[in-house]
Image (cartoon, one colour):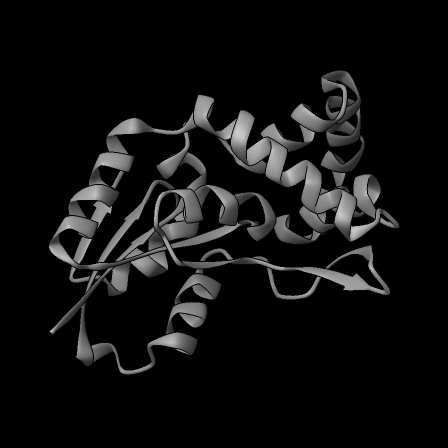
Length: 189
């Protein structure tokens, strides 16, 4: 029977939230902090994922996609290694040695996860996808924010027959709980 090992990214494979870290890496930290404060009152009325999208839009709407890819690749190569949880990378390697299919399921954006994942021989990244029109970022997400039940939904899009595989799931927050709940082997990190 096929075995799948699904890893959350932020706080599981990394030591911190890569969305905020990415913003702080690309823009001045104080600028990011001010924008976070500006949008924080919306937490009362809006879902967290919508606020994340508004913040993403604030910083990236209208940016050329090629430039965004250049920035995210640079971030993946130069910053991500500093915040990666080496113990969890060892877990990835253990699963790979056994021949298990390893994937990342994350609320972060695939453009900075995929270069890192590819380097570590992880071929499947299910994440929040950004919208691009005419070569430019619209600032909106093309898919729902990939957290909570959305993680399960995205997994089932690819592997709908849950009884056909053994599932290991690694996560660190309530956003990972629905995925951990359906796993044969849930691992809280």
